[in-house]
Length: 210
Length: 286
Image (cartoon, rainbow over all chains, first blue to last red; front, side, top):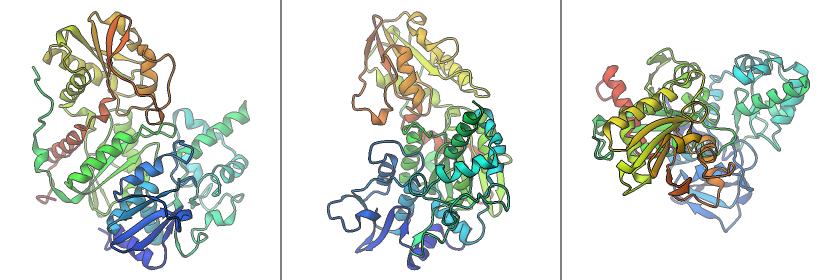
C-alpha cells in the first residue's frame, strides 16, 4: 500500500496551495470544506448540499440539460455548493466531478503514470472502431486540437504522444504541460485518448473516405 | 414454488472487509445518461453499508475508465464485480484485458485483484426477476398472466440470451404464471410479437438489462406498442409511464430493467462471498 492514502495526498496538495481542480474551488470553512463552481466563489444564493453523492447529480447534465459523458468538459453547471465534513468525502465528491483525476495526478507526481500513445490506442480498436487505424498523422494533427480544445471540449492536459517521443505538434504547448494551469491547481491529466476522441477519429476517417 | 424474493439471507451479512476495495465495472454510455445510473446506485448503497474500506465504479464508455480505476483506490486487496447481466464478451475478454487481469486472482505489484462473477450470474437472479414482476403488477392473478423476460439477442459472444432463456425456464418451473417466455429484441421469439406469443389477459414484461437505457427505456416500448416512437431518455423526460397499458385488448405491465433493482446490491456482496469460498483469502478477515 502507498504510504499516504489518496485522501492524505489530497490534503498535502491543498496545503501546497492547490485549491482548484477543473472548474471547482476547494474552500476551507468552519467545520469542514466547501466545494463550489469557481465562478460562484462570491455568490451568496447557492443550493447547498452536504452529501458527497449530490456531486453525481450536479455533474451529470450541463446547464442546458444535456448529458456530460466527459466530465472534464468545461460545462459544469453553477449555483450549488457542497459542504463536506472531511477530506475523505471531499475526495469522494471530486471522484464524481472528475473521475480518476486524483489518482492520475498522484501517479504523475511520482512518475508512475504511463501515457498510452494515440497510435497504440487506435491500433487496439476492434469492430466498428477498427477503421480508426487509418487515421493519418495529418488528420490526427487537425482532429486532436479541435476535439480536445480546453476552452470548449475538454480541460485535461494531454500527456500522450501520437507515437512514443512524437507529440502532436499542432497542439498548443500549454495543452501538453501539466504545470500550465498554475501552482494553485490540481491538473486534470489525460493518459490515453478517450472513447469520445476515438469516436471522432472514426468520423474523420469515414468522412475522408466518403 | 418461490413465495417471496425479499429475504435474501446469506454469508454476505458476515462480509466485513475493512482493508479491501470493491470495484464495480459497468458498461456506461457516451450518449445515454441513464446507462451508468444503476451501477452508481449500487455502489452508493454498498458504500453506505460500510462492508468495504472503499467502493468505486468504473466503466467501459464512461469515466473513470478501467485503465484508470486501480489508481483511484488505496487498498492492496481489491475485489472486482462486473455489473453485467451475464458472462460474455465483456466479462471474459474486455474487463480482464482493460484491468490487466490474468485469471480470478491477479497480483499487480503489491496488490491482489480478485475477479468475481458478474452480478447477473447470481443464482438468486431468478428470485429478483420474480420480485420485480410481482411488484410491477401487484394483485394480478398469476394464473391469468404471462411473464415475458426480454433480452437483447444476437450479440457476438454474449451469453445474455441464453441466460434469459434459463431464467424463463426456472421461473416457469417455480411460479404459478400461465406462461413464462424468453423473448428478444433482435431474434426469435421477438418481443414485438408478444401478443401472438401469449394468450392471457395480463402480460408482464421484465427487461433483462442492467439499465433503463437506450434498449429497455427507448427501444422496447416501441416494440411493445406502448410508444409510437422512441422517447427521450428516462431522466430527461417529464411525462412518466404508468402501468398497466391497454394494448391490443390486453393489460400490459412493463417493468424497469432488472439491473435497477436495489436487491442487486445484496447479490454483488454475495458474488464477493462466493469468490472467497472458491479462493479463500490467506489472512482471515483480509
